[in-house]
Image 1 (tube, helix red, strand yellow):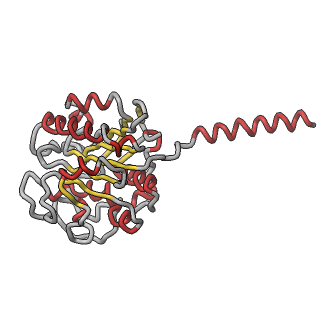
Image 2 (cartoon, rainbow, N blue to C red; image 1 turned 180 degrees about the vertical axis):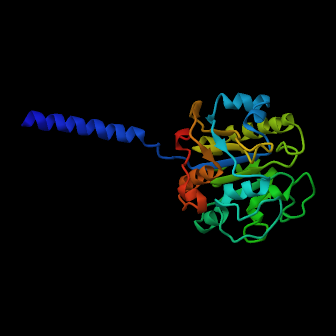
Image 3 (cartoon, helix red, strand yellow; image 1 turned 60 degrees about the horizontal axis):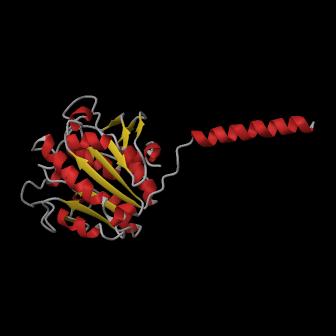
Length: 271
């Protein structure tokens, strides 16, 4: 009898071990950086020399998709888990139900570093700033104090107090109005600044993606995930912008919003 009990215990141990290894790893990071580029498919984004170099070093989601077209509803999806019925690049004041207000309520320090932003002028800063690419001004219908000029990023990177950093290039450097190379060079400088900083070394994760592709039905875009000590890995799991929001909210410890509640987090690219 004891032999059968022993065999049963061994079998149970193996089952438990298999169950554990099949689960996605727990997300562990203290700081989150997000960079959103513009209007390039997966293949088009990799035409940038630096982006192609990053792709060989980072976690790569090869089956990551934007939600829709055009840009604005995708930005809303990333930050609130829904598109709010918006199907064009237009401004509409929305309820304060986004990750920004979540973090504020949870006393989590966050900032949106917007290139070209004049302080307090989310709606009328001069071009190449593009207010359509600043989603946080939609929620509550005002320019939040957390939206600051991109130039403040370099100073903040010297500390670890900011847990969430949204980094929005202007409409040239996000590849919307200028060449792929222009945005690629901007990424080289900006990612280099982040990954050489004190804030980065103190357990951070950087997500780089594109809001949508160049108009295709598939809407597959590049998603790169960088960690200080994590090597290159590839995931073919189907993800989308709701997955990104779910992952960020899990890291920060705030509830998942709207469609992020049922989205699969990108844990296989984090750990």
